Figure 1: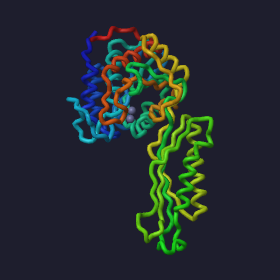
Figure 2: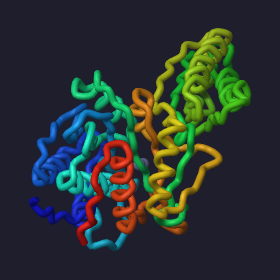
Figure 3: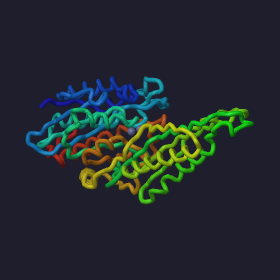
Figure 4: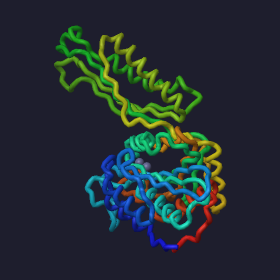
Length: 384
Ligand SMILES: [Zn+2]
Ligand SMILES: [Zn+2]
């Protein structure tokens, strides 16, 4: 057997040094595909953008498991003193997607040496997570659109949790979310004659009150609306306003509630605008559905973690942020879990954040344990 000389830490730092924004990950994709070819695989590239798939068949028939990692970066100016800090000004791996991908490449290295005994393992390297586009595009690509997949797993590193701790939830792990921008169009007039125009002022405040009260209609779920921006007319004392903008972010832990909230919002905004004689432009931005775990798959993660002696933390509430792995989990059953990055580790999207390399082996070991549970992969000693 050919020995694999793969250093996930080195690869992680190379990705970190060359971060690319969502939908611009061409160089990272080339690096990932080149590494996979070195392992002897034949990766399929350009899946739903810069996505990459590797399919590894076992000798016997069996279930199909998809493991997913993302690899896009963020428009944040890195403020670390690392010798591998970003060399792309204003772009940074501040969410640890460099680490997620390095961990999945370590799994690829291991599977190239010790393939699954039965069934099929698909490794999915996903672009454009931060904008909520990449997962849906990969799932709709011909390579996956009609796939029969039995198990989906992915992890996100989690600052604020003890390092190596496995963070689980048997239902929704991460919330659905979307931005909404509401523009109300009326007509300006001289401020001395406001009745000669159509001011959106009162309707704007009605829309803002309606938005903050929207979650009250769904008391049995976690739902949240955050007003993020509002503007009425222009700062000119002589002009009664003709335009107003309100922006908000909606979240829910339940996909059905989330869609009901969106429908209710549109109906209420239209009613308010109609009453005031205004027209409306309403746009949704960066929509994510909720990442809903299957109870069974969450339990497989728990069992695998415990078999490795890892501490398991059960979340009482879902994460309020969103993860577009939800698109995989809405099509096929599986689980998204967290791996603690350290209680005092800089938070995700902070300019001083860096993925903790110490948890690369934790992620690799847990992924391999999951593969072993579903596919009977013979355990191989981890090369140091
Ligand atoms: Zn992020
Ligand atoms: Zn992320």
